[in-house]
Image (cartoon, rainbow over all chains, first blue to last red; front, side, top):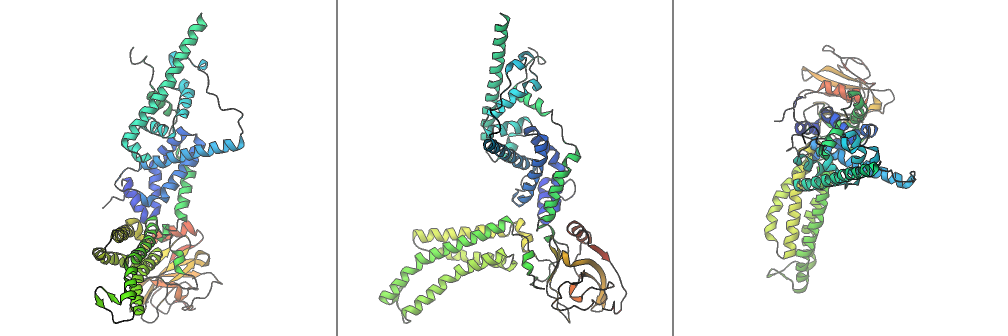
Length: 198
Length: 326
């Protein structure tokens, strides 16, 4: 018999929510902060406020399809959240195309704004954003679930519904591309410094 | 180059960036939690679960409101099972056409079937064969309809029929017939699996008392002198829920009564004041004895507070006697 108390694992909570749906709120209290933070990292806090609600509403609606063999529901929730981020991005892109509000694509801030010698995470942010934006959506999802949320390969595979081998190959591809962007910019900066000194 | 001066690689940079985003304050999640709670409260399945935990008779229509309307939407496995049953009906029809129709042609042309001289007229034989062929198709369709309405007997009957149908696999000949027969059998297997999944269980369960987003359903009950049909009272008609002690069959027993608002439609029967109910204005037809039931009072109060906040659940008691006069 599965445990039903506060310490019951996620699968037990979801199973009991089939008969007593209000029990699903336990899952929210347990995981919503982390899912919200993940969504905020990938979008912004306001969007995250909305998407975290959507994540749990979607999870509640399809809780009867949850595989009770997995005690930890986090990968499942991250998977739903990731899909919603993708949907959000597509909606934004569609609205952008319709409104044609922006006259030009947002520019990637130039490398002159940064000092390559002491690249901090904050300084690298625009570069990273550009590098992440250039990745295929699937590659980006894998990279960020691992880098931001510290999920294992197996958990990412569950979240995205892909084989572990695909997770590894996507991660390798994503890391290589991001590294190339960072390295390319650093080289250009160094060259500029040399030419400026002459 | 020592560790401190080594530039961060891309993963370290990403992790560093991730640290900039803290966990949200609890208050930031209030709106999202409220949306989830609202969705839970609005979900028809939410309060279809046991307010009282013992199943008695199956509710039937009453007060002009079909009780089935209150049944929560079928869960995904049941919906899938119903779709599979329609597929199986089509597949069974195909097997029938492929396997039986050629024999009908033989009967008409030579008056023999399987080496035996036929004494009945070809028309009679044809009708009998067609009738027998239509039975399994009709069964599939009937079961699909009943299962989709949450009839537990249909769930059991479907399972029994599936087991019996397993024997039919032996009698098929021809590649296409065998293929279709196996397709039908596998479809039946999927149906049985889906119907008995834990997520389907609540859909097939009947409750003697149910409170949900729409109102209160009192199940059918049999008394020595008067049976009560199942009855649904929408929240708009409910003024108060009364838990009290009634006396029947010589002893005290817990009862539940619903005081309906003035102007609510008259009940088909039992419009007189409920005997032993200490609260006036409670019709006898709107009460049920809870003897043998596990009434979850806290849950009933929680459901009412959530979906019908203005309605109170009170406990009232009165000693043995004639009760309150109408």
